[in-house]
Length: 357
Image (cartoon, rainbow, N blue to C red; front, side, top):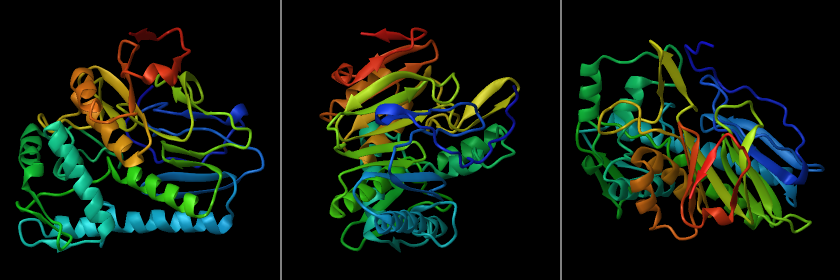
């Protein structure tokens, strides 16, 4: 099977899965990004394209169409402020003024950039919001991908340095020191958006809902029958809906970063979208995916990318800073590694995978 370009997600009809069972699909093939598949009886839902992906919000109990409209309006506001792929956004303006002047931004954008900078510090730059020059150069997901010339990679990598991002908290201003620098919040903005939708649902007194922002999942509230949410972690090498294990718990967010989400193959080698800030090439440490389970989606989003970039040992060390947050690592040899405590919520079901204790 050949994969020469990334195809955009297509809207698909969801399938009924009993017991409110969700499946997080890491990637079915290089050409399709991750998607969960789930449906509930007697629910109100809305699906639309936002934040560069298909987003679905399902109200399992409580809320109405106005709640959904408000939630999607919030998604579009965040996109219009933070997207790097749209002209006129706040992030685009920051990038345009790199090396020239600081740019005043909304409290939304400033907060997300500040959080991204926190993760840059915590990871020593493995997570870096100034990765924009590299992501733009590789341009994975836009079609027609190819490995850039090495000299171009080196030039782009030289511009990636979170320490050259200057924040002025008193004025909500952001300045990139070097001309040619650029921010990309793609590894954290959807997490922030999910948390913002959760706030809307809470204010609307929704009792139970599922937020799905292109695979960033937030299962909210308590179901009418009081049973726990059950979330299936997709087997990255199998067909959609074929899960390798189950996460079971009360309200939680689950975010997965995987090397099969967006990728292309050149000369028999797969190149994916998670880039190593030290080499300028895709991360290559043996990991296939990392799933984070927690209560804060912005943290889970940033952590999933951070941990797949850091690898298991350094990733587990970082995770110690986040109580009640768990990680599931899957490597190329079909070994599954759990962070301490994850065994309480995760059960491995696929016998082709081995749980490392």
